[in-house]
Length: 396
Ligand SMILES: *Cc1c(COP(=O)(O)O)cnc(C)c1O
Image (cartoon, rainbow, N blue to C red; front, side):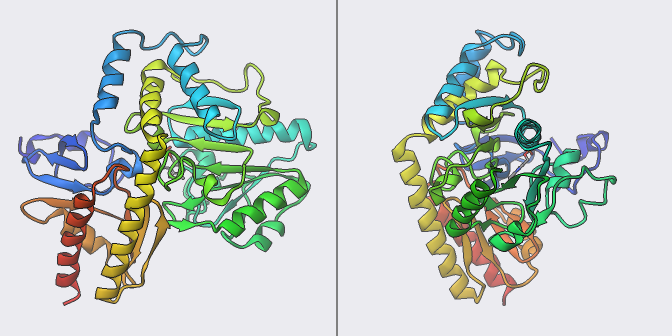
């Protein structure tokens, strides 16, 4: 069907979108309304950890949709219990609450921390977050995020989120008062431009929060579920946080998130937290299928290997074109362009023929790569060859 035949103006305008409509996806590839194919390095924004339409997710959805869709959150269901058990067995956490999105999981983390502060810290409620951090788009999460301008767009802000600088422990210590209940961060800032918190910083943060008896909360919506080569990003630094949030990868493309905490922090009582779809079996059944695949040691070893290969090849590209290097963990990586040519590269890559390449530029001078975690070496080489062609054109 021609693009002009789609009545896109019935949608709210929230972001400029190219004039194509995606109709199919398989693995690393998407197909649009004209039948043109695209090599997809966005994967739904680091969501499709097993690529588009993987068989395990298809099978889980079909099987569960024939059994039970939603008995209500007031009852237990089997996939909800099984996924929670798998997550607690494979992490340092003891309790799980399922959500429908990352922002909702983070809202839950803030509520849990504030409740814990009421019970244990004299009503302390402030959660220190970080400049350029990203935690989602609800009112409170826009306040918790450190995106420039987000403190005023929908004023008044939700208060209680003072901002520190990533990898600067003194900037955190300075903000701690008797009102502080916790610190929340992404182990690798994703939307902020793929900026890893250093191992030393994470360890210092754990020591500092322990010293003050406050909570360490990791937002692993982007870094969790194998993205960094470890099942969870906090494992890169050998620490154990008190609260963790997941989304994106855990659903492999369907809306699923989770809030996890240690037993000592699990202080919700009936009435504090809930939601119509939370823990619904259709989505948690998918989570089980994803975790069974991604949680395999061989799978995680392959992510590390692909990440190292992508890193090395991006470095080579950077050397060849006089760029500023690359950074990241596992298969969440960024190429530093050194010039504000990100948007131009994204546009040129998408318009390439006979097939396009989908890339993301979270900052004008940066490209971010979020392939499926089972991306092949050939698919990495193919992307690099296309990117090389574009850079040769632009830098001529
Ligand atoms: C994407 C993202 C969120 C928001 O998740 P949604 O599912 O879009 O609400 C929160 N935190 C981080 C680190 C993210 O990358």
